[in-house]
Length: 206
Image (tube, rainbow, N blue to C red; front, side, top):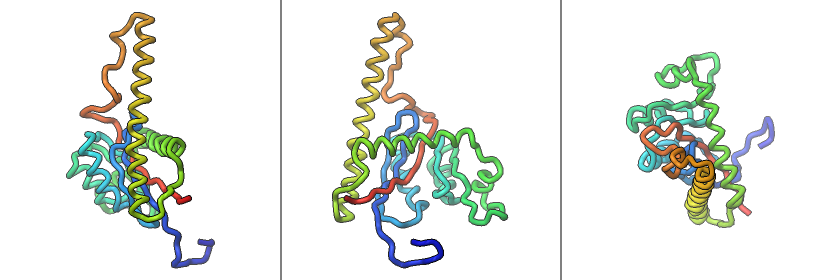
C-alpha cells in the first residue's frame, strides 16, 4: 500500500506464532494463521499450549500483543507470575485505564525485556536451517508445512544441546572436575523458567 493511499486488496500470507524457551531456544507451542490480521487474538491459544509443556515464570512479548485480556489470561488464569508487554501507544497523551497496562506504562522492566531478542535468534535459525519460504499452495497444507518445520526444529536443538553437554563432559574429564558438569538436558527447564518469549513469523511462498 502506497503512502497516502488505501486499498481493499491485500496479499495474504501465512503467519506462524511461536512461544519459545529463552534458555534452550526450543519452541514449546505454535499457532498458524493467515494474515494480514491482528496479532493479539493469537496469544491465548499459543500460551495455553505452552503452559501444558512448560511452566512459564515470565512471558515477554512485543507491543503487537498489548491487550489487557492477554495480561489477565496469563497472570490470573494461567498463573504466569510476570508478563512484560510494552504498551502500544495508540493514544500517547492518555494513560491506560486498565490495571496491568497501566503498570507497564508506569514501571516497564526494560532490563528484563532485553532478553526478548532470544526469540529473534530462534526465528533466524528456523529460517536459515529449514528455509524462509513455503512450497505448499493451499492454506491447509501451508499450515501443515509450518508445523512440520517446528517438529523438525526441536530435535535439531536437542541434538545441539546433547553435543554441547558431550563436549563439556570431555573437557571436564580432562581437567578432572566432572562434578561441575550439567546433568539435565535441556538446561533451564524447571519450576521457574525465566522467560517464555513470543513472536509472529511471516512466511512467503515460492
